[in-house]
Length: 293
Image (cartoon, rainbow, N blue to C red; front, side, top):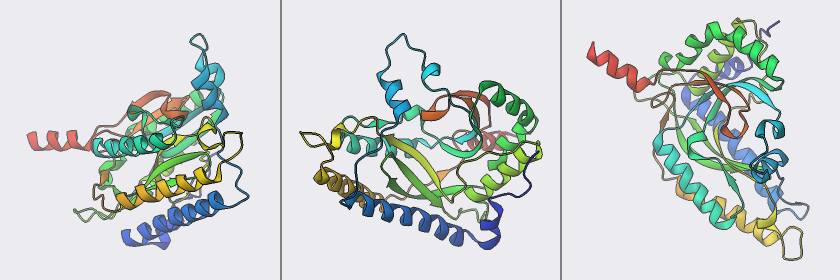
């Protein structure tokens, strides 16, 4: 049985304009970033948290089936960044890897933002069953960006001990549309719920982000004799602060679905993998079709 209370509705009900929603998104990411800075600079900080599954995938021999290492299966709705944002992320990744050469970075062609996680960490047969249940709603779900121009911008690099992500916040569209990323997530949840599926999302916080990098080793942050090098942890925080200072002058926006339509992805979707069940039409192509009529 599906759950009837949409977890995204409350924030929209309490914030009736884009400026208010933007403020909530800003507060969430700034609060979290401040907490991480305090943690990283604390004498109690013990170091980076390695992703054991990703580490094993990266070190597996050529004859090892990745599906046997990562057994988590999921069903999600993704959005791809624009080329401008892909370029931006790749430039950030290069700066991070110059400091931490062993850092794993998300490949350019696998970059994504998760609009909705429908099922996660489930067996293949469960994911397949839920996909078939949701499938009649997929056309409508993937067309959601047509309801209004969903614009995000003001990128900021956020981090914790396990990963880094480029976050963006809702921006008012030049068209005056009041439809935001949070509205998009709300409506996606409603459509999945209407199919009778219980949405099992882990994250409903006010955040729009692209995972940029993860840690597969602590080697880049250790002293020669082993253990965390606190000076390197401090330098890492300073590097991220410098990147964010540069990002403060970046004016580029990301319009969800403009260059690539939304994607329904299933299977081993961690780290940008998995298979596509269906893809939406890019808004740019719809505009061309409209002009040619």
